[in-house]
Image (cartoon, rainbow, N blue to C red; front, side):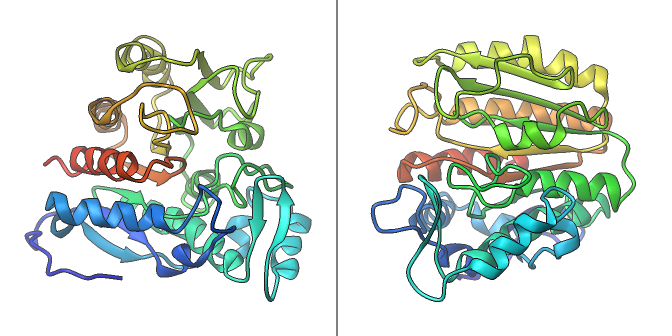
Length: 319
């Protein structure tokens, strides 16, 4: 991992950038779109943009099993730990596999969100982005799904609620795919309000049938562009989020709704991600001292992913 001399003044509380080399060691085959090159593409764009030196770089610790089992069943967690292959791959679902490095990568990904949560709540970071993989929002309480093993954002949100004593947290998911695992974990949990949009009908073909009252689900057709998504944010998400008054905001930051991403058919661009981020920061500033933690979900066109993460991070860092 590259390190750079920071230009952050000693008195400034910075935006955190949490990642770990073990997150790049996880792989599911050379053909798979959820690949280690995703993290390299983000690093490359941060360097090219000149943004890298303005972030607080943090190596993500591994999550504790206690933290993981707030979101996942002990039996499932033990299955992942014990069955991790010594060589080759273990297929968990048609899209998701483990290699020998996967378990540690998954613990680092979840641990990044927990560590970011602690540092933001303690005032050591203004906010944070976790550049981690495997992603998490399809991971169900007792099953892997859709490239995801552990639900990183759910683990972080439950840490905030149950270990740090918060009473209300919001989860915002702007991935092109519905975060079905996160919804399953928090359905009818009055401590959590989850707001999302997603392409529909589309994998995982969920989120539209009788969602719980604490779910603000907005299915959108293929081809939806940024103007329509911005209207969803302003006219549907924000009124509900303002009413809920969260004490912290977690973002499942998927960038596969970008118009250049072949795994979805929506039409967002970098400026749309910056807009959503800015509006969420305004919400966080009004209700929870700016407390916001984002974690990488989708985004599979490497160039579009890197550029979109830069737009997201530049907005978080107020640059």
